[in-house]
Amino acid sequence: MLAVLCLVYYGVIRLATGRWNSTFARVWPVAGILLLAFSYLEWRGRLPHVMMLAILAICVLIILTCIPILYTMFVKENDACDYLIILGAHVNGRVPSDSLERRIRKAEQYLKSHPMTKVIVSGGQGKGEDITEAEAMEIYLWEHGIEKERILKETASTTTRENLRFSKALFTPEIVTVGIVTNNFHLFRALLIGRSEGYENLTGIAAGCNRILFLNYMVREFFAVVWLWIQRGKKKSG
Image 1 (cartoon, rainbow, N blue to C red):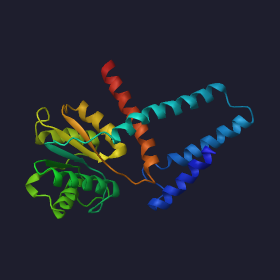
Image 2: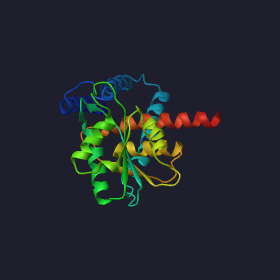
Image 3: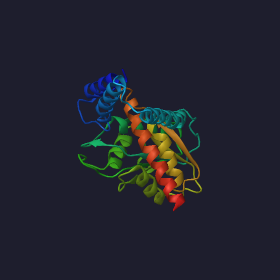
Image 4: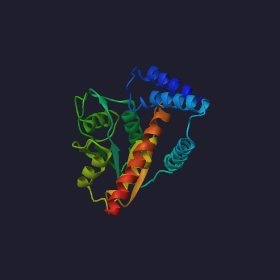
């Protein structure tokens, strides 16, 4: 049943996005095929017990990792941020992607209700982008009534860590309160990275995401967070 659900979900992603190769989506047919193979082996009585235990352990690890990711989505926003940092996401030519537009709209709402807060739009230019992600965000905020003098740009970063590392050059992170604006599924990892980069007064501001793709994003975040924890463990042991 799980195998069929994985394959069906891949089809739903295809219908929702119009693409077969959406970010991380190909994990679903792979998972479906593997689960079908495991089911066949189990039916034939050839699936080793150690394999069953490994599958169970992976499921438990996924659940335990997703708990803090989900919890972070609902933590109350700080009402006194000196700066917001909007983390970059893909731009289609000059138009913000759905994920990025949701981040900008969330920041816009916060900025309009907190007129003393400044915002850093952070993101470089990647494949398929005619302008930097920071420029796309800046234009959107201008057009929606946010004053130019409140907007600072960081245009060199290509990853979440670089977003936060390079943005630090625009203020003193030790003495100001900073709000990270990103999609809800990404917020936990972004806060982990921010704290590892020296941000002391850090809070998260969660934008929404495409509901159909939410499960896909959560599985992707599981692997990203586990990899981040592994990298931190290596640094500590080194």
